[in-house]
Length: 459
Image (cartoon, rainbow, N blue to C red; front, side, top):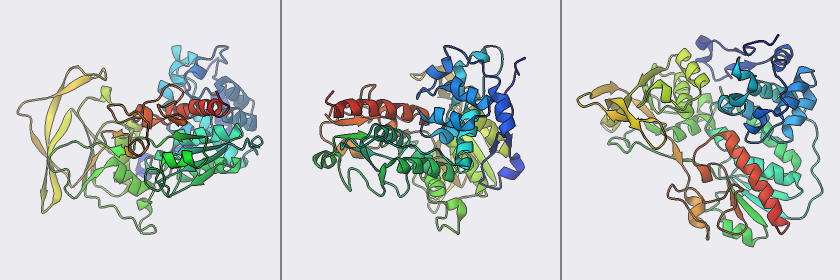
């Protein structure tokens, strides 16, 4: 008889974890993983594979896991996914592979993400299988950005035999995996291990290289690179556009999380990157980034942390699991609330003037549009405000590269294979789609790698 619910994953208690930055879920044991794997129906048509942007052979790796052949399961996953420990932790499986799981028609879907994480962690703990890339073709490709799209594109191209150099603007590779996702959700040693896997393949990663400043795409093409892939992401934060956003104590979520994650402010004073944080913190937004910022603020010692979201719980784009964890830890969810002005004392944030909202007709996103309620103004005591209302594509590469078309949203124009309007230049991930998921960026990197391979072969 099939077990109706997923095997639960052990995790730190809310009371304990809110005082540390250790990972919250503790993973499966061997026995738990095999028990969960036994729930898989091993569908012949496997809708879960179509639901995965990088088309992992999910039934195969789960079957190998059920049999206890974890090394084979890891090899199966890595045929199409070079970042499995990351995807197992941060991918929204509930809307992708698990969202179309046949088992979900009657019971809880198979825990595909949890099993992927288990297999990847098992391999890391027991030693990765050596993978030998094919002999070099002698052809060179430059990849701009060491985030999910760039790393995936680079790995695939190296396995096709091409010489690949990744140019990363920051001092550590990983992109949003390093600067945007907190340690308690995605440990940095996990990211570093998977990035090191690319180095073991022979991918060269050049750090502190700001393409568009240090070097340009045009220069790379003139220096003998046969193609350039642009995966520079969407790291330019959006703001509210209200009075008072320049007060001390107001952060974009990008700055706040980068200080804490990449610059290790959570390890202050060992790492000398302090973060000015008040007693009363408000985070504006309802996505995963907002949850990450709120939960991080609690761990840094804030007495009270609120999420201000202008719609209702039903419209929140954050994963249900992240909202659940945030509430368990004590984050105060304030729905149908929108800040309209910030007030300060001597240039320092002191309070936020907010409006109550109600939902009107749907907007372009399909969600009901929030409408202010007349006369509903109220003041909220807050000495730190973190704005987490989305990001947009950074304009540096498009502005400094000739022949690239840019959309009205500031993203690069490219087809489904990543082909741009400039010959030899390809793009994928958030720089093309706007802010999206890690796995969708990886899928774009894979498609672009295949297109670049054809391009280098004269196709």
